[in-house]
Length: 274
Image 1: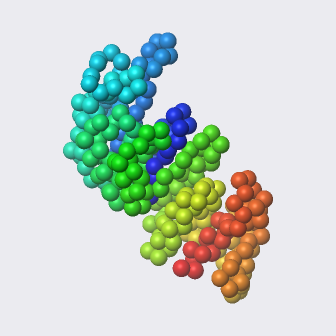
Image 2: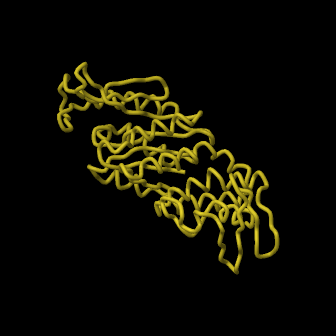
């Protein structure tokens, strides 16, 4: 899965990425953090790579020819940290690639652009943060890369998105226990749910549904009814032609946010019937 988190400044993009990385063992990439003085005033930005490299990439104390806002951009430092990762290119299937942040400052570096291009075309999972207040041809091309899902974060939805994406990264290894066709269903369904901002449903798919299937918690009672042993209760999934319904609260729209119409129990039944 390839995800770009976007949103207004201070929306929580970088904080969410850091929270996701905490639940991922194998990862490679760049984080960016603010540099502040003793009075708490922002004086620049520091990039930190998974290779152990740390560079001040923008500041106010060393003038350069490039300035973004009130900060001078140190392209040589951005090049340095990007090159250290380019020299260790390639990723294992279990490795997650990440970049924080794809923004106006960083994109003055061609090496940084190459790193982004390499990462979004790798077969491994990728997650990055990208500016929403500045745009150019390169950013548009990145967003249009095949498989990229852009998620817009705001104060209202960020906790649910964080919960949903943590469920994915904590449980993604379970997907390997499914058949190839089942894996393809999960891949397509998860992308559809994120595109349609059904974050609770996405959470349920990875936190519950796949586990129901792997742990054999789905039983076919007859041709029109399944019993799914849920986290707290058993639930009945009824089949009528190509339509499925469930007796749970989520299917009925009784949970917040209201994502009525599908649930983890229905997803589990769909998975075992592939």
